[in-house]
Amino acid sequence: MRCADKRRRFVGSRDMLAKPYHGATSCYRFSVTATVLSTAHLPIDIGPYLGGLDYFEPSSGELARCEILEEIRGARALISLLSVRVDEELLDAAPNLKVVANYAVGYDNVDVAAASERGIIVTNTPDVLTEATADFAFALLMASARRLGEGERLLRCGAWMGWLPTLLLGQPIHGRCLGVVGAGRIGQAMLRRGRGFGMPLLYSGPRPVAQAEALGARRCSTEELLASSDFVSLHCPLNRETRHLIDAEALSRMKESAVLVNTSRGGCVDSEALARALKAGLIAGAGLDVFEGEPGIPASLLECEAAVLAPHIGSATHEARQGMARICAEAVAAVLSGKLATTALNPEAVT
Ligand code: DGY
Image 1 (cartoon, protein in one colour):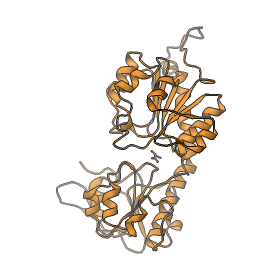
Image 2 (image 1 turned 90 degrees about the vertical axis):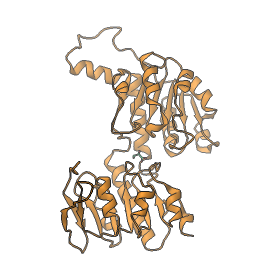
Image 3 (image 1 turned 180 degrees about the horizontal axis):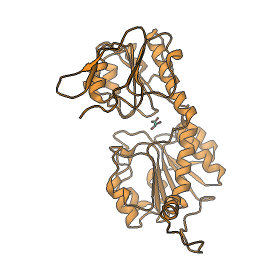
């Protein structure tokens, strides 16, 4: 497959030489050795935050993997999207790499252990996207509870015949129980929103969280949370413990009137089990921003009227996405000047 986007932007002192690459793939090779390689076009010019380092990014869209593998060879820093697998193959292709700045707070796409073994620092983008993502999780909660997706489709296809006492009745939100799985920064922000809506609050997670307790949230097991909550919102990282955390059994514990919201990672939910549960009326609805294997969406989920689906835009505000770019650039500049990035996930990699 030929890479769609052939326009590139190189910022720095060297010229870009683009020529067809006659290898096993049909990718183009750009004989560019930039210090910092961004796998995607970013929403701001990161130059001012890079402390004079030259960098290379696509002028739009993102690089294909074959291009990343080619262009990473001379780079000392990588700014990667959550869709880029930063695995041993990629790290081995980058002998000079010192830092991977993941343009996301979640970093399940990065093999942090493999990076540490090679003395490479990995960073992420906490804080700047917390409120934006919680806003969006709450938007999905409300849209699913009040069947906004179905309503919009009805109206847009011209099938709305007018106001009726029984049209698109949904679930109340105010005063209903909100259960948050994972009370980290975004989970806490979700709890704050729930508190504003007068919702009793539950949370589950590996340890008590003082900030969640201060909001009046009670910690319980995930099993109890699933059984007691009217809204279950996932804010946990994706790892071995949380993969398919919401499976058929978990769904069977939930109330028939309950709504599931997922803005964390698609892999936390068994989407086929969710589609079956929605179709069978085991739960009332789902608001999903993330999908296993995205951008592919399982056909079974697309068929579910009671699912409100979004294209992974939880953090998609101008402010959050610009902040994420700035944080990545600052982390790169810090590491390449011998300092410790405040967002380093594996500071021990260089000690
Ligand atoms: C993240 O940061 O992990 C989100 O999924 C994208 O903002």
